[in-house]
Amino acid sequence: MRYMLMIFVNPDSYQTLSEADQQALMLEYFTFTEDLRRSGEFIAGDALQTPDTATTVKVRDGKRDTTDGPFIETKEYLAGYYEVECPTLDRALEWAAKIPDARHGTIEVRPVWEAPGPQS
Image 1 (spheres, rainbow, N blue to C red):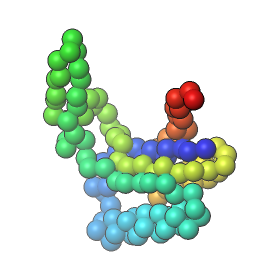
Image 2 (image 1 turned 60 degrees about the horizontal axis):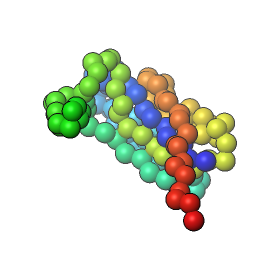
Image 3 (image 1 turned 90 degrees about the horizontal axis):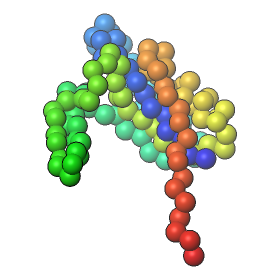
């Protein structure tokens, strides 16, 4: 089954890290990603830019409305994700616990909905 491991962090937590600690965290991410790739369970993953770079889109009464910035003001924001293929939820949770930001933020694990294909 495919799972999304969504990384939510408070950007203020990075401001308290020294340059060396920030570099160490990035190295942890590179190592984690490489371990996940080697396992054969990695599908995709990326870091996202900060919420102030977002554009929110809504369509109401057939008209598109765009707004700069995030839809919701929160302390934590979606900072990145991994998509994995794991045989069980427990295995996906094991990977989620190894994500470096699990120590500072929250990792949400959610199964990917498999849309039914067209009937033959």
